[in-house]
Image (cartoon, rainbow, N blue to C red):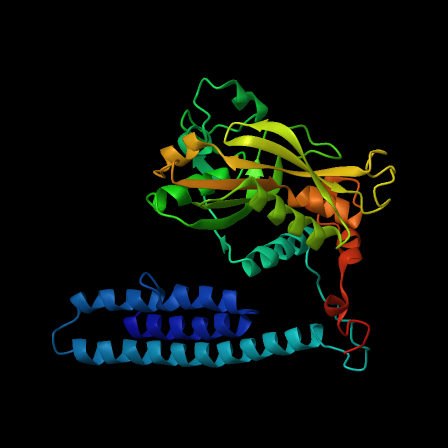
Length: 356
């Protein structure tokens, strides 16, 4: 077979293969077979070395003409296959525009988000800053800077998730307070609240979770007294549970405050008469608080003879459970739409009952 006959046969067979390609992948395979680096047309150029010098230009031109002819047919076939694919896709994905539209439902804020934002709004109005911090925290800021040295027995009150000997998932948002006081370099005033997630090794049941939210507050300045703390917490209780609520302070113990108190609010369901919500006591415990321990102030660089302060910590999970009558804390974290839809406000509902 002469070189011209071989060239003609390759071109004819290429046209047959191109027309038989049923999709773009098959066509690409044909293109590689004939025009690729190791393709049949490319292979024709190997004969150049065997030709006389005067015949090489003409032969090279013939090979290029075959290549161009095959490329042209491939392009035409590719256009046809692409159009066929598009038409098939359009037929399979056709939309019946006469069908009624689906209802567009609005989302709603999570009850925990509502509770946290309500508390934040109150304290922003009182001139507090909102400060956030690290969820993976150093042992020093989580414990030692809060008057809890490594040997302190009160560490057992907070069973912790340790990542290494010196790092852990924070057990409260108090490290944010310690870091903020340290950054202020002993200069007041400090007036902050610290919302965020915290973690403790606890069994998951109706009232406990290994992860929950917390909001802590801190005020440090000259002449801060226990009466300032009581007035702040009374305002908080009335804002959350109603203007007719009262609070009471019971002596307690926290390593980072002295004196320390547990804070109860009069039951909003029975008005203090006694019911199943308040366990027939007329009071519901909502948070812990106290005057900042002098050791905590000194470790953060504040002169405890000049400055004093108060701190408080609350669980928005518990407050939301009381506020909305939720019996199981696990409902907050299961993302059950039926549960979340119960807390839609008028603003959340919007126009969701209108077909758009």
